[in-house]
Length: 163
Ligand code: CUA
Image 1 (cartoon, rainbow, N blue to C red):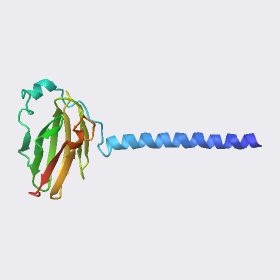
Image 2: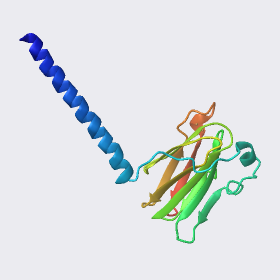
Image 3: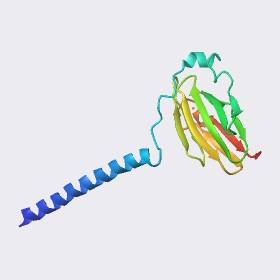
Image 4: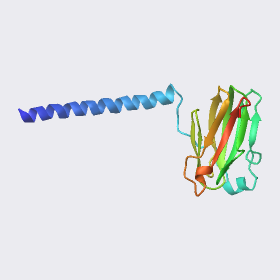
């Protein structure tokens, strides 16, 4: 009888495993289809050395640019250990597309209080969007260890003239 009990529980574990796998699979499909969540893709490749010498648009002019549709594009170059520009100013409610690359090593690109959490990989272009509904100062943090002064590598998004 004891053996049968074990088999019963093993069978339950098998069922549970299948249920969990199917649930996770459905969650992945739903996240892609319903929520539009996806892994960053190869938006573009750039030569980090050419970016460093200012030869690659739009990275030859880092800054914030208002778009014809009223949104903003922030072009950011990361290098050890700073973001250029270090301050990005937009009005409250702004939709901002960040276009970011690195001239040297891998950096992080995390913006506090909004859903921006990316990796800046030399040779790759990171594109992420965020909407800043509330006025305030949002810290941009490098959260990938990138060397001695990694802990001092940050920037700010100033929304609605705050700060
Ligand atoms: Cu850049 Cu840590």
